[in-house]
Image 1 (cartoon, helix red, strand yellow):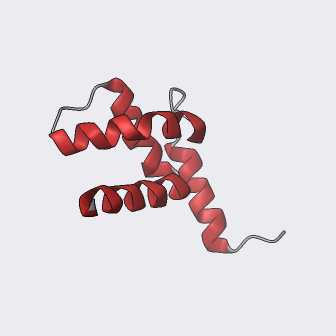
Image 2 (cartoon, rainbow, N blue to C red):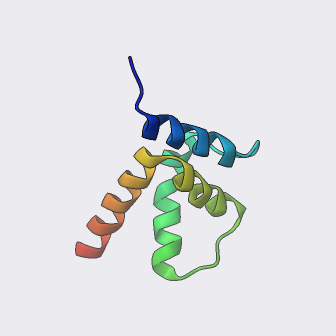
Length: 76
């Protein structure tokens, strides 16, 4: 599989932004419902929720999923 220069740049940026305490996609999925609920209530972010927010900064797949979930909760 060949990567484009933009894909390599995105991967390098995500790698540079990765922190040792960062959660993975599975952990993100387990916490995202609580994150959306906290956002809807305007509650301050506790460390678990901050980890969810950090993950979507570096994971485009989870970011897209979060955006879709947020739109769905706004409509419903």
